[in-house]
Length: 308
Image 1 (spheres, helix red, strand yellow):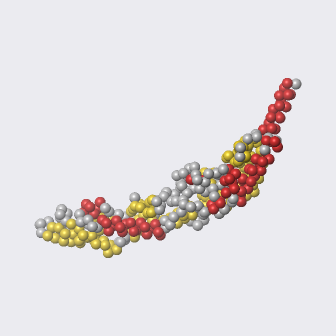
Image 2 (image 1 turned 180 degrees about the vertical axis):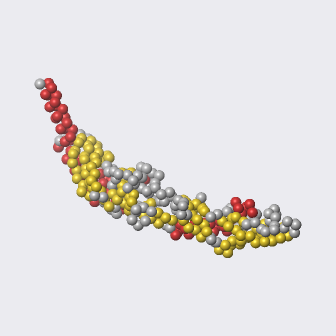
Image 3 (image 1 turned 60 degrees about the horizontal axis):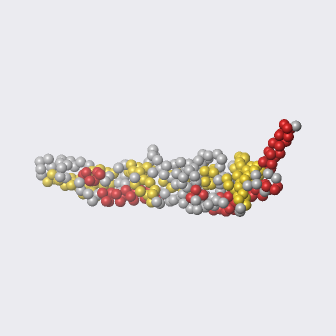
């Protein structure tokens, strides 16, 4: 009899733990969990955030907004079942589809003096879904600014987000997307290249560097700031000065074998008038060619292009 009574007691305890009964607020918690998931499916991040008490002043939560979620391909086919908990805490099993694939997850809820709220919901880390392309800052429709590839705690609601350029210096492929959800590393169709604005900015910096450099007259000074001066025929290097003239500035193209911020410098026409002495010590002049480095690297810092 004692053994039978113990088994009955365990069964009753398990039943109480799984269903919690109407008196524990299971219906209220389950209803709130259902609303929470449905709001995400509807693109109503504001209401989902209220239910989960999300702090939007936290930079990790900048994607949890109506502006971002409403423009994404959101979850569908949501349902709620399987309440497990007590009078003050609960787990509710939720199901949904994303890209035609079904998922089942648990939403955690707690109850305090202000009522039930979602304590652990459905935001997932963005970093696992974001493609890693050196120096490229991606954006998504509705987001002000860029996604932070270094912030592994940045989160978003489960959805498929279109990837865009976050500034004028990047061209992102039109079909680029990332899927945020239980499965990480779900970027698709992503290519990125320097935009014409980036190329123009790098070319302008090279032009500025040439103009600032060519005021020097000594070979070592010119070489140090990036201008390679040819050797004057029949003249000694010692005591020779150079006056650099620019006929045409070089052009800039993306380096084919480099990373996003690497560029090839080509073309242009520069010469220098050399003034010095010949090997017999007599005054001499001559014209020599001037060249620049054939490869440069740049980066975007605080919204501006800078040479490395």
